[in-house]
Length: 240
Image (cartoon, rainbow, N blue to C red; front, side, top):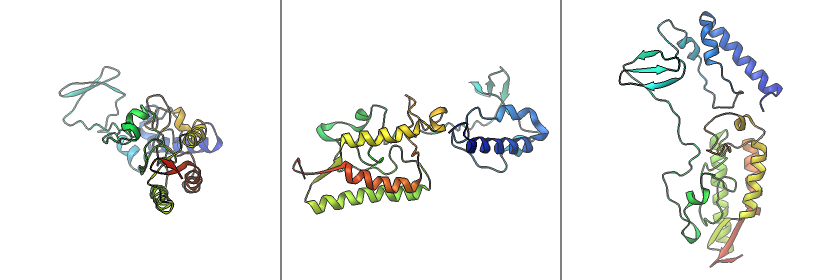
């Protein structure tokens, strides 16, 4: 959380390193100092970033507000001539499966059901979409990522195994349990720096839909808990 001793210590350490690296060009420090808490956005680790922008042949411009065929105009109205423009604008992290059309019970399309608010039981299964499992779904971004992905695969594999053992032909997430699961993690996410910063972890409504707020081990253990209580099996439409 922002303002906690741990977060404050991290920020102080980062600022001290920045001041050391930019000592010869101190005017750059206010321009590159974040106005959000540490971890509020995805951090970039690089030993040469500050030394690179501190070079005499590098100009750090404030926010670009206009682009012309041969230059960019910053927010102060200053033009900067250019030959090459590289855009690093991020990606659609909150638009899960945005290139795919997934249809569930009654022909409902997954993106229509989500309506911009993606959520799933343990980030893997969605109510109303039987026999459908996701890897790296909503609110499962954490580290180490491979361990999380293995947990997602384990969730799906165990559901398929239990479906076969019970003689069922469908398995899907229970709506009420899925709702409780998401209420649990959203309550925790509201206490994190992710909820207070403008980042790509949040959707248009401001809800954090990408991050897992606990440890990877907690995910592994909790996914077993929610799978056992939240996945429902049926044969020919009858619960078993």
